[in-house]
Image (cartoon, rainbow, N blue to C red; front, side, top):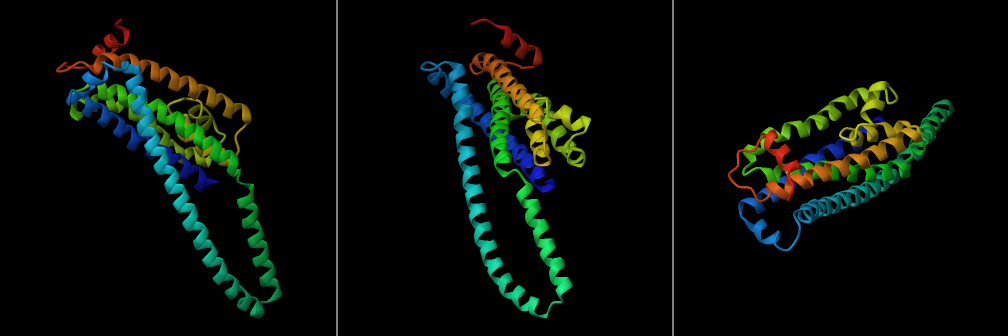
Length: 259
């Protein structure tokens, strides 16, 4: 459970960083090359932003599925080869093994199989898919908004820090969460939309009450709907602004501006 929880949380953490940066870079490239001026003559800025987020997300999700299939296939083949060799070795070893030692080995194998069977694989995979997509849309929209507001990656640094703080807090807190999956810290962070994708995936293999899981999902949906709305209002103005010294005050003005 510890390994599964940490692995799932870390995958979401890496995905946010890698593909969020790709979204920001893609938006920034279109803005600096002035291609976006032609594109927005045909589509609304919000549609362009969502298309960018969905496009990069589709590429990333496809790559993730390929990795899962490859790892699963290689693991299956490897386990088959190892189990075949182990059967021969076990047969030779059991002929020389005392009855008591053989009984202990059988009990150990049964315990391992029981531990594997106790892991809710289907539930973990479905929850991973939900929190994976929820985290991507939530942070992807924010990365797109930052990319639309600045003229270079250097200008984006001041806006990136507040975005990545919840991600860093999540990955650092995950060690404490894995030690006490139902503690106050774990429950609180798994309800906050900016930290719940990583923290909740770390908790699920240990067992999470259904009401906590449902509440976390509802709050995450509300979170990414809210961030998409905020990002869309900034994007519609920022994507056509050049040479402007952008700060938080300017972005707030863009958010409230009527077009």
